[in-house]
Length: 146
Picture 1: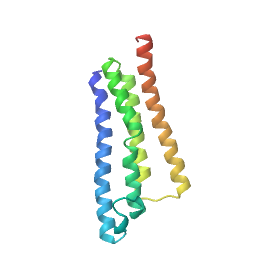
Picture 2: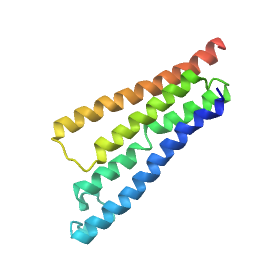
Picture 3: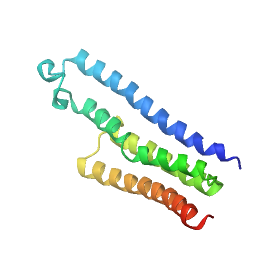
């Protein structure tokens, strides 16, 4: 399998971030149009926006947490010629977990907060483990040269 394919899940993850920014623009437009925005707090305070906007804002913040580690690990795998089919599967599993996380966090359906947090925690943990597996692969190559 061509090791450059490891970058396809990276591109999909980047697309998740781009889509989040589009969703934010739409959510802010809708909130402004419907009068849900507190204009006096708009510039500096997230609480100026309704929950529908804050959820997307939080999702965008999340795009620059664990996904950044994912990007670095993928680049390291590629540089070390370790972007095997094994690592590509785990890269895809991470990206899928982020898509599920995005849906739970910003989806139109609203669920009770305790179910929402519990579901997101599980999906986040799964994605974090996928990055940990990829990082372990890097460590294995660095330590053992395999």
